[in-house]
Image 1 (cartoon, rainbow, N blue to C red):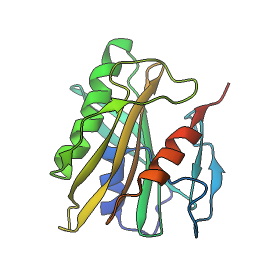
Image 2 (image 1 turned 180 degrees about the vertical axis):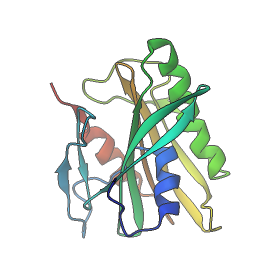
Image 3 (image 1 turned 90 degrees about the vertical axis):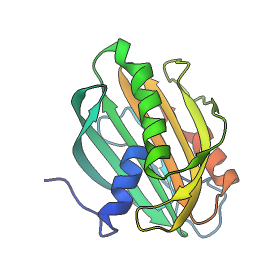
Image 4 (image 1 turned 135 degrees about the horizontal axis):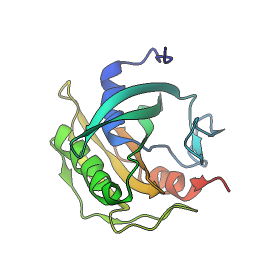
Length: 181
């Protein structure tokens, strides 16, 4: 049975649609640690000890197993989610769906998306990052960023959400992710 973190499942579910998240290593008051999520082939830094979860998700008309790693620190939620879609033709539509689903769930105004680069990722025109401002399911205002990218047929989503956006931390996190060789 997957380990469940004591933080609310609502936060985890919000982050599951979102995916990939963390803050920069220079942010004060955070306990940064290197994390290698099981089966992700990815190395990244989390500012807190992430809990893991697994669930079934519907993407592109199919059901997949999604893994999620998430935690909260300094009033921010950080998450990385990933799923192997198994078919190269599904990667770009899945990346787009992951990004758009989070914006829709948050009823968020989304900034223009920009290309994201993660060391060792598979290039894809849908590998994008954008800022979001919306509302959590409990009605609380939230701001942050989402980044989606791929490695082979595995698609990833990194998300950081909180009451206020921390652009420097978001940038630091994204620059620190890389795929293991």
